[in-house]
Picture 1 (cartoon, helix red, strand yellow):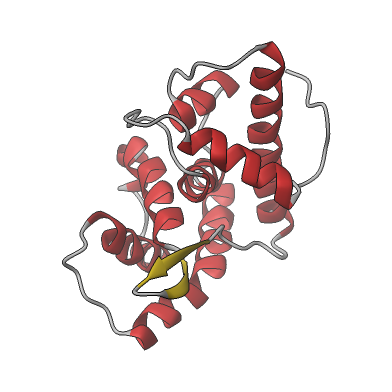
Picture 2: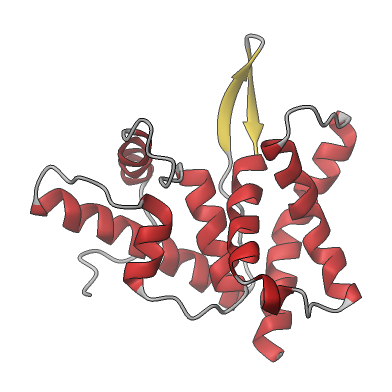
Length: 184
C-alpha cells in the first residue's frame, strides 16, 4: 500500500488521527493514539510479523469511514506512524514514547500509561515469544509493564518520583528490547 506522504506525522495529523480513533464511542477495539503508538512500538520492538491489515484492525477494529478519502488518509497516518517508530528504533536515536496530556484535579499532567498499556497489548499478543525473554531483558520490560498496570488498575498507587524514574527509562527500554530482538 503506497504511503501518500512520508516522514513523521505533523501535530495536526496526529490530532486528526487521535480524533478519528476517539470518535467511535463504544467501540472497544479502537485504541487512542497513545495506546496505538505503544502497540505499534511493541510490534516493531518484538519484530512481529504483522500485515498492514492486521495492524489497522488491531488499532481501529472495523471503523466506518466517511468516505474513501478519509480511509486513505487515516491509513496513511497509521502507516507513517509505524514507519516513524520503526526508523527511530532502527537508528536508536531520538525515540520517545507518545504521551498524552490529561487533566487531573485541575492540573494538566503528561501521562505515559496509555503508551505502556498499548505496548503490553502487543507483548501479550505475542506472549509465547516474549516469555522467552532472558532475565536481563525482562528488566528492560519492567518499567513498561509497571506503568501499564497504572493504566489498567486505578487502585495502584505510585509515588511521583518512582513514576518519573520509570518514565525516564522508557526510551532506553524500547531501544534495548528492539536491539535484543534484532539479534535474537
